[in-house]
Amino acid sequence: MPVKPIYYRSPMVALHAVPLSSGQVRTSDRLTNEVYQAAKAYIGAEQSWEALFRLACLCVDAPMEEKVTHCLLEMIATQQPDGCYRGVPDKDLAIARGALALYEYGNSREVLQSLLLYCSWVSANWPLVMESRDIRRRPGDLMEFLILLYRYTGKPAVLSLCDRLRRDSVHWTGILRSYPVKRPTYMMASWLETRAGIDREKDQDDGQYTRQYMMSHAETLADGLRSACITSQYSGSATESDAGRVGWNKISAAHGAVCGGTTGDECVQGSDPSIAIDSAAVGAWTEAFLVQLVQPDSIWAEEQLDLLIYNALPACFQGGKVLGYQRVNSLDRSMQLRDCYHTHSGEEQRRRATIRLARAWQRAYMSAVMTTRTGCEVHLYLGGEYDLQMNGSAYRISMKNLSDSSVQISLQTKEPVKAEIRLRAPKYMTELQLAINGKAAAFEIKDGFIELSRIWKHGDTISMVWVSELHLVETYHQGRAVMYGPQLMTMDVSEHDWHMAMVDEPYLEEGVVRVHLAPIDQTTVDIAAEEEDEEEGDDREKKEKEPFKPIPFPVMPKVTEERETVVMVPYASVPVHLTVFPRAQA
Image (cartoon, rainbow, N blue to C red):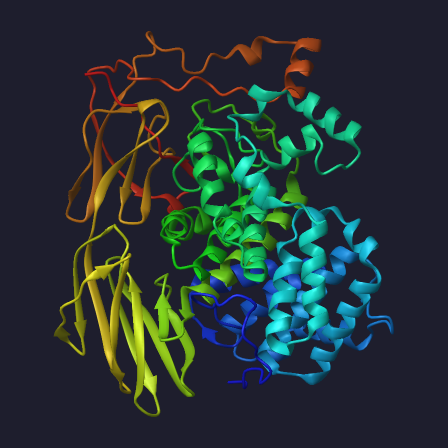
């Protein structure tokens, strides 16, 4: 295991918890390897290099021998004398972030010098850097890079760049706290009108249509949430550190849905449950919530992470391939992607989605276990080995999921280490039992965590066993969704009719979730009129250019007398999902 950088400095703001770095986490998780293999197909894009290298550190025995490492080293060796790599701000930042991950792993002085030289180029070419729309509107990537580099070097010049970036980039804190979040984009303005307005504003960040689009574009909005949190690590501003929570309260109120829901849609269509989910936005939202974990009051973000990590994120991968979009709750089988107001499709969308998902997945492991001043916090129960330090003593936490409702944590250390291990206890863990070295241990849950403070020895184990709660979630138009523990349950639409309503509450039978459904009486509800097929010529062409207006969701519909007992399956286990069910009229 490489030695961690010796020039590690305290951050500008003392963080409640700090994520781990490249080389500190290892896992044999199957999905992690699938993500890595999928991302390798896009190694030609510099934007993939950081995630590829960090994923290699997670699941490959010799990450320094991987192709992505050679790409990074070659780029460092051919760096221009003035400090740029390619002279394109977006690409250069992506390369620099990859090089920083490389430095974290190997502690190479040559790599560190390259990073400082890059910062000199950024300072000398600041106007050019700020011309980049992505850097200006999504400043979190550059700010995070600068903060980490300062922690390792303590260079005042790096702090100066942080100050300039905070001053000249989009002020997401103000947007999240004050800009009104409205319901579906098509209710504010048509897509044609919005795009024409953006063109007229000529890339002005504070333009009416541009700002409206930024608050309606799911991936950009997620990056804004992440940027505000990262910027607060530099500024120490309580207003900035709380902007994510305030913004999310407004976003979820206007666009609330289960499992990332329509917040994962390209243009945040609102509360309608039948809009396809953009996989790239799912990755962006996962990152946005993960960065909130450095703060002590992050329970709101962790609850959203449960929905994403255990549902929407793995659902992006089907049969080893990345899905550009997830089709959810489509009440009309004929719905096409154009109906979902998306701007990317095909291979371009798959590339975007794969890179964003790779970034999100590696960050999930880096943040699953985080270091604190007194020990560590376990936020996500992701199987793997996590290397930590406490007061100069190194120790390793090995986490293994024994089942969907049990986990075992074992410690490895050369000498006894005194540390406080805080274990997250989500609400879905009911009848929780905890044992240390096989003996039942008393505990209390405080602020969502179990605190275990003691002197730990080699071979100590912590076991957690719980009963996953089965419960209903109230959704769109009095609809219902079924949750079993952290998993959103869905009906396999390949085996059942789509137009079904829930008759009574779901129940468990021999560990299987079942629910009674009944077909909706088609004579009383106009669910999916096939008007589109009847349109021809100019009318049809005009409609295809207009944004999709969702099919009315049945509210308390009448049902036929037929009853069907349906086995519910986890959301990520099937490619097409029906998760929101109308409540049948009594």
